[in-house]
Amino acid sequence: MLNTKQFVQIEEIRNGVVVLKNGGLRAVLLTSSMNFALKSSAEQQGIVNAFKEFLDSIEWPLQIIINSRQVNLDNYIADLDERAQKQENELMRLQISEYSDFIKSLISISNIITKNFYLVVPYSPLNLKKGGIFKGLSSKIKANTYSDAILEEYKNQLWQRVKHIQAGLRRLTLRAEPLNTKELLELYYNFYNPTPKTKKTPNTINSL
Image (cartoon, rainbow, N blue to C red; front, side, top):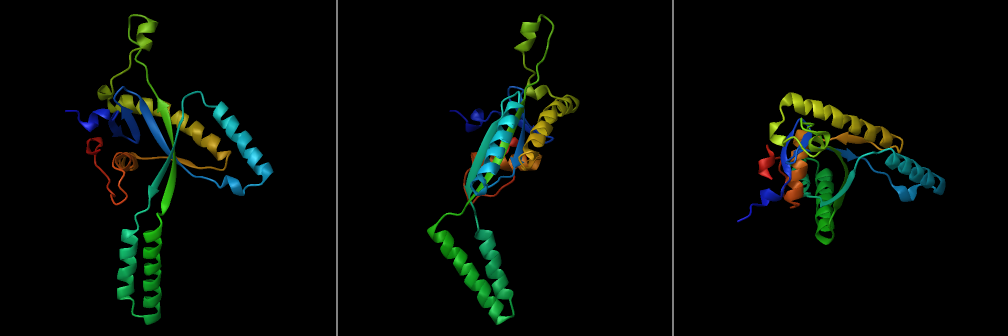
């Protein structure tokens, strides 16, 4: 019987880097966004031109991910109810209770969705073994052989691409920050376990 983990192409997540089973490395950047529709025609054209220049400057594949998730407000509502109970001022207690009831009624008739935007930056190191150039080009280093020193060396190469992406997005007035190990584990856990009520940060990739 097939285990679902066999379909997960991630070997490990270490030092803020996603290491794939084929030896490839990935950095994941969380980016800010803009309301393009509210820009003037001149501003929109400037953004389009800047984005085109940004894409033309990239010499490697770049994955863009838009993640939409239903917001879980259970903890927020519970906190409001607790604050209302502890509030000594009658007027404040009433206002907090009414606000809590409003939030409950709002989520009962419609889903509240949040969107996050990510960029996945790749780097695939090649193991140039003896025996000819063509043989070396097709031979990837196995992910489970990466020592801390080797991984740090490859991460430096990957981070050069990350910095290039960050600089290009700054021209578009956008920010992009790479996720750390904990944030990556939480991101992938939620990808593979898309339940709005679930909020968990796994310790290792095996928890997916």
